[in-house]
Amino acid sequence: MSTKWTHAICNDCWDARNPNGRTPHRLKDPEPEYCCFCNEPTISGIYVRSDPEKTPCKGQGGRLHEEDG
Ligand SMILES: [Zn+2]
Ligand SMILES: [Zn+2]
Image 1 (cartoon, rainbow, N blue to C red):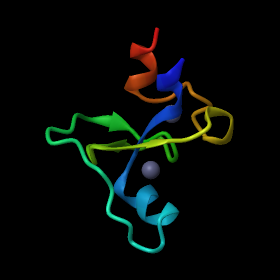
Image 2: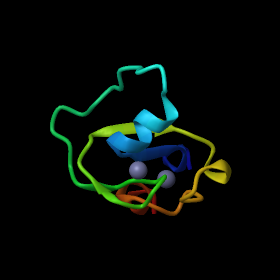
Image 3: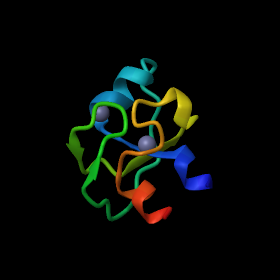
């Protein structure tokens, strides 16, 4: 349940959602993902917590959600 709140986000969407240029936490060894916000492939290694009801993927997009079972 908790991982539905964790979403992959690409560099472009991160920048769009963080106009102040906040530095994201990135995985050291990022894996290819689909951005939960624009659905484009990304290897940004950035993940954000966001209410699935308010996120374009609705908790359904991205590889993390598949692992959630
Ligand atoms: Zn998502
Ligand atoms: Zn994106």
